[in-house]
Length: 380
Image 1 (cartoon, helix red, strand yellow):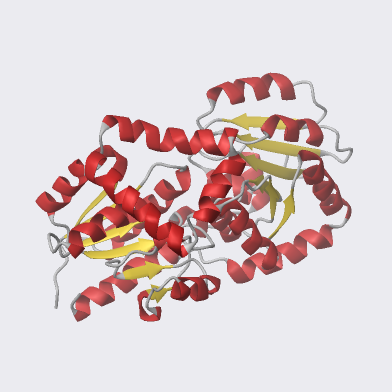
Image 2 (tube, rainbow, N blue to C red):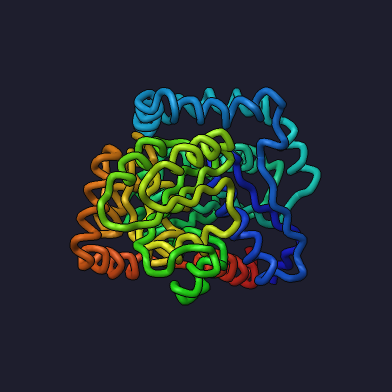
């Protein structure tokens, strides 16, 4: 039997979802492997300063300013021949900017590495190919479509959020036996259930009002102002919770703007109780990030997917719409119309909740770590 003593859980801070998934795995690892040394960190902390700053900055710039270009890059690099060429350039980039991460891995020699982003996979598998490290590598795919970037020879296990991803992963060349579908790891708080009325009262909300939750991601991006303006025109009484993430400027602007609207608005910055806000709400308007969507499903919360950018967000929205977990809105006006339809026909919301109940897998983090424990007990 192999004894596991050191575990690395690694994410890349390019969007809050990768970090939140890693944090959920860290909590589960502490329970499943109580005697192991479990470390959680951002791979960018072990890269050069310029790479550390540029990586998330370029992502945000592309998403906010040039979403069409981001989508173009996403779809082109998902083509096998282009992916092979892109990997050559990425390997050169990693060799220049990510040496510190390689040194850290070689020094610490973890028994098990679990990742929630493909960047660290490419560096670790490069070391494994050169026989410099023998760590067991598992990766958790954090979207509902597996882009070619996720495939790497040397990854020992792939944890996919749903069975729908299996054909694509196999087509990419991943051995079927290496793919497990336990769901996408989310925090254990999303398993807990509360009485909605009591929860609303505790949060300072009107317990009887239809409650709309709007999230803009950890970086506070998206057309939130236009959306609040549209919701302000809804005739039926509602209350609206808006989470601005780390965007303090957006929060200040919305506090001032929504004070003149007819409905009750509560404007938050970065929050630690998203599980409670979701459970207190009747519908979520959000981008279709993998983690946010999964957290909403764990709380039986229907989604109105707003402006999914080309790339992983659009792919996620395709999955959610296909399985009846949400509806897509290509504008703030369409989101308002969807809300008005739900208010006029409560049965639509109930049908969405029933579909969501079939998709929700709130215990994924524990199931992933439990499976990894079984693998090690057999001898990894």
